[in-house]
Image 1 (cartoon, rainbow, N blue to C red):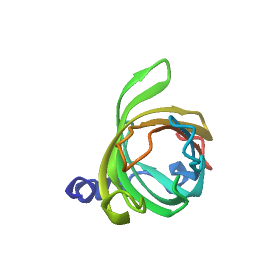
Image 2: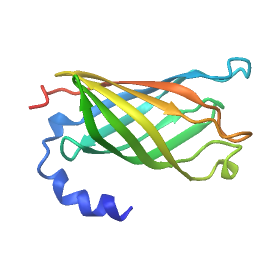
Image 3: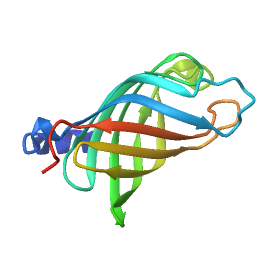
Image 4: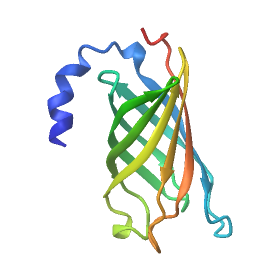
Length: 148
């Protein structure tokens, strides 16, 4: 949390037009026999601090069909042929088998493809036995400006 507070002055330097918005996730679950919800609709934002760091927050209907919230920091230090690689570190809530639906910390490997207006985050959500169902998660995102 202190990293987010230290980054707060950087928000003033990034125009709001460069903020990404998203309608949630599509999660392709590894265990296809559990009857999990793949379409995880919601609303989220991703506010870039610079080319490496972005703050993210949102709410969505999770794979257990419960309301979840998230708050995190994308750390994307690597780029290869226009694809950024790194992870998102943060917290989630709303999963009934993890902390009785309370908040928990997560580190999720992520890749991002970003164009002028459209982008796609691809994350590998690890399976945690009897707590969290693993998936490859796709998050389509949009921004109103051209990102410059």
